[in-house]
Image 1 (cartoon, helix red, strand yellow):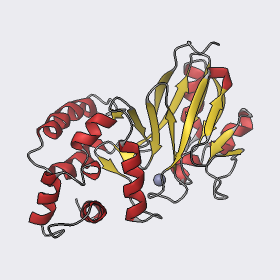
Image 2 (cartoon, rainbow, N blue to C red):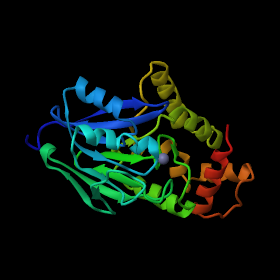
Image 3 (tube, rainbow, N blue to C red):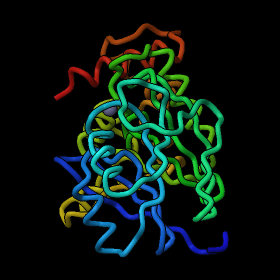
Image 4 (cartoon, helix red, strand yellow):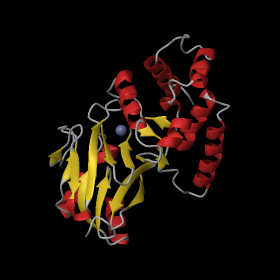
Length: 263
Ligand SMILES: [Zn+2]
């Protein structure tokens, strides 16, 4: 296989609202966050692909529980955080490591993005402009803070937001429509958000994923990437969540707490 072999990404829906991502070149494949082996094996079978590596973003079971079952059937390297809670990791990755998949001519940059969990890693296929960010950045939202601080999550999201606007965002859950309901509560007059809601509502009505998103769209519609936007700040002040003059981390913290209680 040469590096010019086109590489694509297959969506594997799992559980209620998870997506596992299968990066492939029509012969070999890498799976991101296999929380269950069965749908991964079905996709490998359906598309006649040979699994050559597993990537893990963080320790939660819906991202990891399929690893050992897959390893029983295919002995492949497993890249992920150095966290003893994750069974099967063969290659622990840390910030700025490069993950190499030589059979596919694929290189991915690992970034530590703590916040949702402390061990969370995002993988960037720089040459393709793909971001696999697990439960850190979601379409129109972000992950809950189970382990990290608001400062950590804000820094992690800000780092992801520095990527080129065209970067495709492959996050791990189909939360987009409910995230957008909250985003519109914060910014009811955001026209790009209103247009996005129409597009993505149609996709879900046709049982299509709303993902991948892209960084440019997220910067225009995702309140958690808009902590410096006057419209977001004004809305938080109006709803009594922050005082005027609050810094961006305070804005982020108030948004995350508001979302936690939003139904
Ligand atoms: Zn998680």
